[in-house]
Length: 194
Image (cartoon, rainbow, N blue to C red):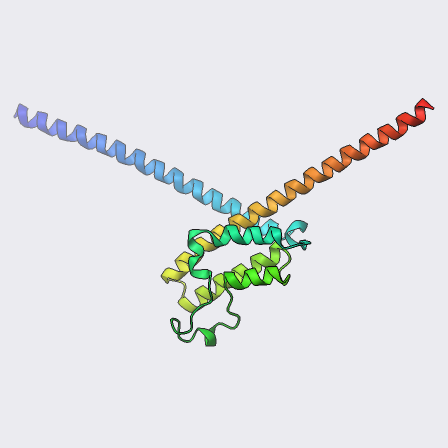
């Protein structure tokens, strides 16, 4: 009986260790999920405030900035499906259901010919790619899952581009203020010296 009791105690102790390990693992997973939810919420907040940023709507004087953004997005692994127009032979009924078919190659052409001049216009056109895909394939399809990943990547890249543009504009404003103040001081200094 003492051997059986010892064996039962060993099994109980092993079960306790397993429970502790599982609960730590579960706790870590719960923390990770909570962090992802917080980041997702912060991203949604940033996307909502994006529309209020003047640089998001500002027309670029040339296409280089938007083409650079297009290149970063089109080189992402999830963008492969969206780089070329949908082949009607592979997707029967696409032309009938989708009123404005669009893909990344068309967006590039629209940037080059200056039909898209701002981050907002670019973001809107990429959103249309995603909308078309979900509309044609259905919300629960594999293509829709890929579209969500693609759209997340696009949102991150657009947010990053607008943040960088905002920071550059703030630096330029600060540099202009410093230069103006230095010029003003120099101007007053020469008046005082006379």
